[in-house]
Length: 184
Image 1: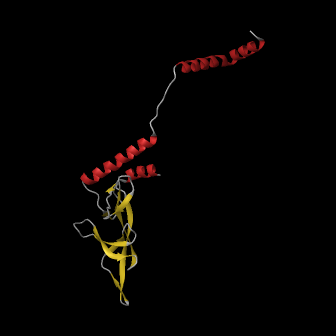
Image 2 (image 1 turned 90 degrees about the vertical axis):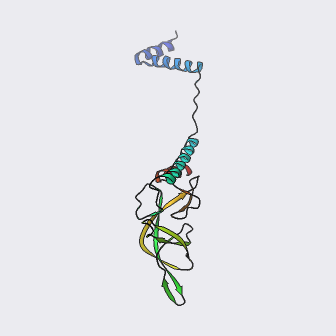
Image 3 (image 1 turned 90 degrees about the horizontal axis):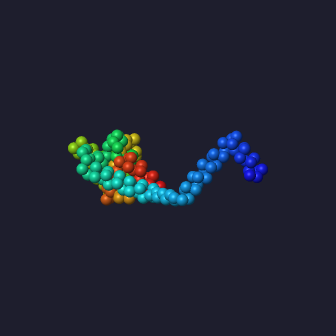
């Protein structure tokens, strides 16, 4: 044994490093003899699958669930994804005179057309598009708000709200959070 080996051996015995080196060497030798292969599925594929399942589950729940989600409600108290809608009083010019339009209105998803809100239909609000838009009338906020149901397509993109489905389906707020994270 060489003098340098003796020094390392003596030092190793005092500190316990020799046992650690020999343990590490046998581990390395063993792992070379039997290679280990780990496969991990892509996280993006699992996230997309989960998101699509969430959208499909919410679509089914909205179609067959009781109670069905209301298109508009006074308070955002349920778990469906909703958008806040301001109510307006509309006025139109007739000659030199400004005339009030009956009813409460809200601006549609196109941000141009006003919809008339009718809350007297069987206790559930209803609405219909009007001929009034942002260029042919004046609007004054009433300080009242409603929460309109948001509709989304199969990929999670918003298609409309309240009474403007545009081919979409309702989605829960928790599912939308998953969709928004996935799409980001």
